[in-house]
Structure formats: structure tokens, C-alpha cells
Image 1: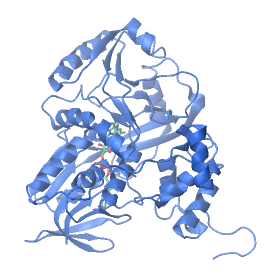
Image 2 (image 1 turned 45 degrees about the vertical axis):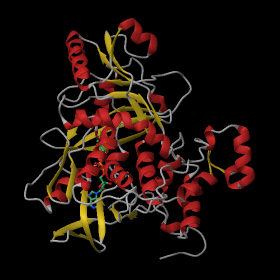
Image 3 (image 1 turned 90 degrees about the vertical axis):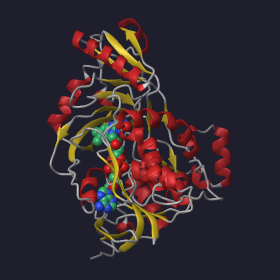
Amino acid sequence: MYDIIIIGAGVNGAFAAYRLAKYKLNILIIEKEIDVGNETSGANSAIVHSGYDPHPGTLKAKLNVLGNSLYDEICQDLDVEFKRIGSLTIACTDEEVAILDELVENAKLNNVPVELLDKETLHKIEPFVTEKAVKALLAPTAGIINPFELCVGLVENAMDNGVKLNLEEKVEKIIKDEQGYAVVTDKGIYLTKIIINAAGVFADEVSNLVNEKKYQLIPRKGEYFVLDHFSEPYVTHTLFSVPSSKGKGVLVTPSTHGNYLIGPSSMFIDDKEDEATNKDTLDEVIKQAYRLVDKIPMNHLIREFAGLRAYHESNDFVINQLTPGFINVLGMQSPGLASAPATSLMVEEMVKENLKLVLKDDYIKTRRPLYRLNKKSLEERDALIRQNPQFANMICRCEQISEGEIVDAIRRNCGARTIKGVKKRVRPGFGKCQGGFCEPLVMKILSRELGIDMKDVTYNNRGSYILQNKTKGETND
Ligand SMILES: Cc1cc2nc3c(=O)[nH]c(=O)nc-3n(C[C@H](O)[C@H](O)[C@H](O)COP(=O)(O)OP(=O)(O)OC[C@H]3O[C@@H](n4cnc5c(N)ncnc54)[C@H](O)[C@@H]3O)c2cc1C
């Protein structure tokens, strides 16, 4: 019998596993996708918001501000990229300036440091901001993070500390009895004392399997453009529009890897699996982005993507334990990522109400750092290559990623099993050629390391095969 089963390996499930892994507990994560962080947690703006804008007194406000303050140490321990670059909320009209003034008061109530900048100061620190801007709100504690790397780091550390991860397994039914719960998946049945429901946009359906009170989450899609990294100067802070009832609006921001994100849109949809992008929506995103900057270097456009917010009618996070031992983490819209370190502390407290928690003696606090060859000096690279010549075999020319790094990303706990898994962990395929050169080489490495046929290597989830048959010589059925 497990002590805890966590449903979902997005940032909230991953954080719950990471927090609880320090105790003597038998923990299993069940995730329906082929990788962790593959849903909303891997497709968002990646901002660790400062917390100036959530309504004071809400869970969003409380957990955002605390969560933000916890990120430095966690990212250092787990070797996850995180930079406090600060955010600027740009006002272009008198009405928007009035909203900035309200936001200053809101920030005070939430205990978040902010500063109003006049036009001249704004343009001095961000010359690419639109000439129409008249004022801006600087929030210096806002940061950018690599959210996928975060999920991997959290789960890897949890696994280093004994947590089990079952991928490609979907929870379909939950039966409650006096001992706890029987979790029925498409692959088996597991008994557990506690369930943590961190199933993202599906968390309502998982909660409804057990609780009398029924929830409904409505997916609200956000679409983005991704620009390549380039050497000309561009924006260095996260630029926000003035928020509205639809949310934080379109932003323009650098990412931790030096790319730029432009988006997101905000549209309610019906299908919880619809992550397609749409030209008209993205045209509107660009229109909105021109309210922040006068120039968008669209010649550097490399990709589009979409993520789904889990909207609940309260417009706040819903974290509760309606049935003893069944903990809900649902309605985790933005700032769910920024809040996640604090959300997991709340979950930990709820677990303590059910179980006596005893710390492990052999808990491992830090994750073994990644190699990150392209950030090392020539001397450091040389030393690594002398230890292992795979570091000299450059697989991705655009991003400068070696075979040694890819092999490491596959062999670690919570290692990559797909092309997308390798790409999102160590970046081959993220550059200008978008995998045109390196994808077949990555496939070969995956095939060798996982001991599977090249034909069985997938891009992402089940069925997303790249190869079908040999074109020369022997043919396969
Ligand atoms: C467009 C957009 C922009 C955003 N920007 C930001 C931002 O800049 N900053 C910020 O703080 N927040 C942001 N957010 C919010 C943030 O991304 C989310 O709060 C967070 O990622 C939610 O994480 P989660 O773990 O709850 O859900 P998810 O990441 O969706 O994880 C849930 C997991 O559960 C799995 N699952 C579901 N059902 C089952 C089942 N039956 N069995 C097994 N597994 C199951 C899913 O496959 C999934 O992997 C944004 C969200 C969106 C959509």
C-alpha cells in the first residue's frame, strides 16, 4: 500500500513529490503523458510573477508572494534556470495610468515592492518599449524560469529520494474504503492512504470521482509566438500589458535561454486537449504586443504554441480536502507556476493532518547539475572531453549541444524517452533549424540508449512515430 499517490506530474504534482520526498513515505506519481511537465506546466509564459496584482486576501495573492520568495534556493538546489529580471507593466493612456496607481496600492497590501517609472526612465532602461508609453510599474522581484526543466528537476530529485513515477498511465476510477483509496488506472490498481489530485485541467473530473461537491474547470487557451535568440539588443524585462478582466493580457518577455515569448491570447474553449494554434488569434496577439513595443523582429520567429489555463468560476485557486485524505489542487491558473513552491507547503500541511511524518536520515537535497557545455569555458569543455569523448560530438549545431549531454539527459532519473523529452531537457532542436539537422541523430541516440528500434522512437506521446519503413533494402510490414 502506498502512503501517497500523486495524480499528475505538472508543476504542482512535481512540487508535492519534491516536498514530501524528504519524509519516510512510500510515494507514487501517476502521469497519463509520456513525460512530466508535458501539459500546462510546459506551455505557459514562464514568469515567476512578483504578486503585485492578485486581489489581496485571495489564495492567489498569498501563495504567489510566498512562492516567488522561495524560488532562489530551490532553483539553486535543483540546478534550474531562474533569473530575477523584473517586470514592467506599461501604461499608454490616462485610464491605464489610473490602473497602475491602483496596482501600486494593491502591491502595498500584498507586500510586494514596486516603483512607478516616468516615460524617460522607462525608455532609458527599455529603449524598445513603445513611444506611446507614458508610465510603467516596475516590479523588481519578478523572474523568468524554465518551467519544464523545473518539473524535471523536482521529479528527478524526488526519485533520487525514492519516489516512484509511472508514466503513460491514466487514472480512471477511485474507490474509497476505511483504509484509504483504491486508484484504478488503465494499467492496474493501487492502494493508498492519501491522494493528491494535481491533474491540471482534468482535476475537476478526478475530484468528482470521489467528492460529493462537483467542480467544473473550463479550459482557457493561451497562444504564443516564440522568437529565436539573436544578438541585437531587445527587451530585458518582462513587459506586461495593464491587466483586465480577461487576465494579465499579452506580454513580451525574454526566456531563460535568450529566446523571446510573445503572447498569450485568452479564449475559453470546450476541448481540454485542444492545444492547436490559430492564425487569426495569433494576428490579434501581435496587434496587442504592438501596444508594448514598437518593433517586433518577426524575422526571428521560430515557433508557435498554446497552453490551457484551468479556469474555475471563483477565479482563485481551489486547494482543499473535502474528503479526508483526498487533497485537491485545482483551478491553478496563472500565477500557479509562481505560487507552486508555496502551494506545495500547503499540501504538505494537509498531509500532516493525516499521517505522522518522519524525516529521512539519508535525504538528498540537491540535484546533480547538468553539464551545460555551451556555458562552460574552453578549459572546462576540454577537461570534460578528456573524461568522455561524447562531449566532443556536437549533435545540435544551432544550440551547441553534445552527445554527452543528451546521453546524460536520458540516463538520469526522470530521463528523456522521446525526441521532445530530449529537446526540452537539453535543447537540441530548439534552434533556428528546429531539429532539421539533429533530429535523426537524437533518434539514433535514443534508440541506442533505450534499447529500442529506431522505428519505435516517438516525437512525443504514443503513436507519434517519425519513421515507418526502411526505404532501401529489407522492408518491414
Ligand atoms: C497560457 C498560460 C500562461 C501562463 N503563464 C503563467 C506564468 O507566467 N506564471 C505563472 O505563475 N503561471 C502561469 N500559468 C499557470 C501555470 O502554468 C499553471 O498554474 C501550472 O502549470 C499548473 O500546473 P498543474 O501541475 O496544476 O497542471 P498541469 O501542468 O496541467 O499538470 C497536470 C498533469 O496531470 C496529468 N493528468 C491529468 N489527468 C490525469 C489522469 N486522469 N491520470 C493521470 N494523469 C493525469 C496531466 O497529463 C498533466 O501532466 C499560465 C498558464 C497558461 C495556460
